[in-house]
Amino acid sequence: MTSATLQSSTTSVKTPKAYQALIERVRDAHLLGATGGILSWDQETMMPAGGVELRSQQLAILARLQHQMSTDPKVGEFISQCEADRAFMASDSVESANIVELRRDFDQATKLPERLISEFAEVSSKAQHEWATARKASDFKMFLPWLEKLVALNREKAACLGIPSGGEPWDALADTYEPGCTAASVTKVFTPLRARLVKLLGDLMGGSRRPSNRFNELALPIEAQAKFVRMVVESIGFDFQRGRLDSSTHPFCGGSHCNDVRMTTRYSETCLNDALGSSMHEAGHGMYEQGLPSRAIGTPAGTAVSLGIHESQSRLWENQVGRGLPFWKWCTPKLENFFGKSSDGFSLDELYGAANIVEPGFIRVDADEATYNMHVMVRFEIERLLIAGSLAPKDLPGEWNRRYKEYLGLTVPDDRRGCLQDVHWSMGAFGYFPTYTLGTLYSAQFFDAAKKAMPGLEDGFAKGDFVPLREWLNREVHSHGRRFLPEELCKRVTGSPLSSEHYLNYLEGKLRPLYNC
Ligand code: ZN
Image (cartoon, rainbow, N blue to C red):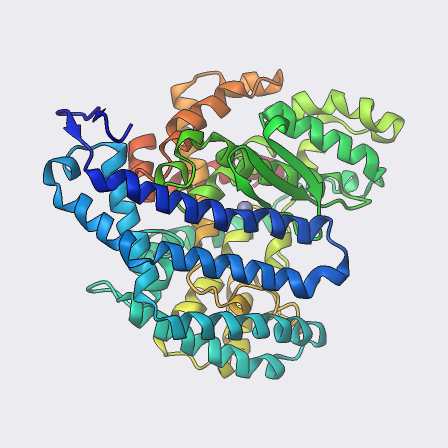
């Protein structure tokens, strides 16, 4: 491809000589680092407890080697040589888009001094351990010195990365997870979202009807649940020839590359919807990975755009599909094959209702679709203040609890169920949380575009035909890799920039009838 002539939208342009050498280096670094994906998966699913100590050292060595390889000055030189070829860079080709993204990666990696990287790794590794202990004891004061260190390190990291003009330090951190994301752009989307969600939640809680929760309390054998969810994820299009589904305490989707995707789910004795929701969610991530072009493995063109776009794929299958009436029309008659008489006596309406129960709670990861984003907003607003230096870490619990009262009407009973519940900050990950909500909003906007492009799409779901949706996502989203920035991709796929309207209309259209409000 590289020594040949490129297909460009306007003209035919040759790739610079340095391109091939650059891609070889970048690909090697990526493949080496991606080996860690298999080791991490193994750690969560198969590894005996005795392996922990050396496994973390193995992972650290891989990360260090990958960092060294990708920050090698030779990589920078090759990028500059490609950039110097103006005709090539203007060619609107996959190759020139790769150079733009490789420049971004290289600059980001080399802007951080070696000393900061190792201090960050050491502090966050210890802080995670201290956080787990503090959470168990529900003792914020125990975690406070670590939080102070992590906030200081993140402020330093933001300064090294460089604050965009007119922006704030939080932007520099968020950009590493969601390219182009700023606190101002998030606020613009979150503010109208919050106002309508608060109103919707109030209406739902005061509604004259409530779906029955009986199905979510039904005990069903885990073995049968495992067979059932495997059938579902296979039906929606996860390719078991190029991936696995196992179980772990916290479901995740990892692995090494598009032809070896490792995802996990979790089972609860009494709630099939728990395993079903997590499996469909992770399968959405998994199908994104499987849909990336395998010829581009290790290059930006073979890599997912951002955390937000990744999350849009998981949420779309979990919520727009998996909590929808057409899906349950297909699913309901199948339950008997897996669970025999136990699932008798549940009507379609009851099963659909049970998948859509709304109940404000303290814990983000257990939240329903209507309340989930408020959990994210609280975290976004707080981390923005922490990174700006306008909220002292010692004042975190007070700020947290005040917002939970205001947004969800809940009095947080202790820090374990409050500001100590998430692992993210203890890992040093600030600027990460909004990607969950951005993904949720993208999912609704993408789904509206898919329905517009394929009338009758949901009628197919009721018959178990999920192929058109998966193929559409593959074509419109997955196959581009990182060729477009998230906001640009959204405009290409849906015709307009990200807006909370699609999500709110979807949510209100579904929940108001269920709660009769
Ligand atoms: Zn996810």
